[in-house]
Image (tube, rainbow, N blue to C red; front, side, top):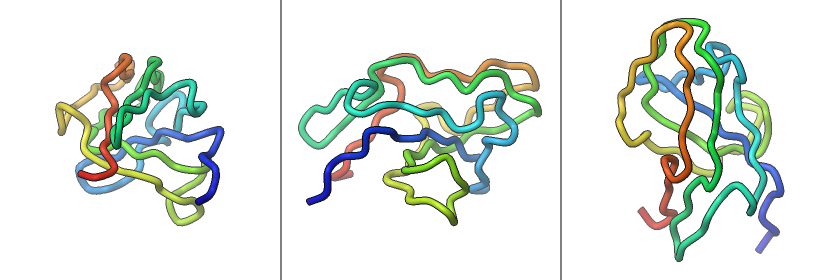
Length: 110
């Protein structure tokens, strides 16, 4: 089994499956593993705030994904992808998009 990556990128997607990094001030957000994530059995969640900055357009966020690189999906590996807790969620231009500790969760067996 390969070693876990030391860096994982968090990316958001709209309700049509389009990646939203171009509409977010901070684009994809880099996190470190295991430091920025807490693992419990087969589940894990962010242990630090994930801040995408302000939106540069009106957006609807449906899904969040963890990726191996700061690249488009066709140039990278998407480790896991799922709906955000309050999907879909609309953000107006200039709104800060962030997820507090524990708001991004995944269970690899779900």
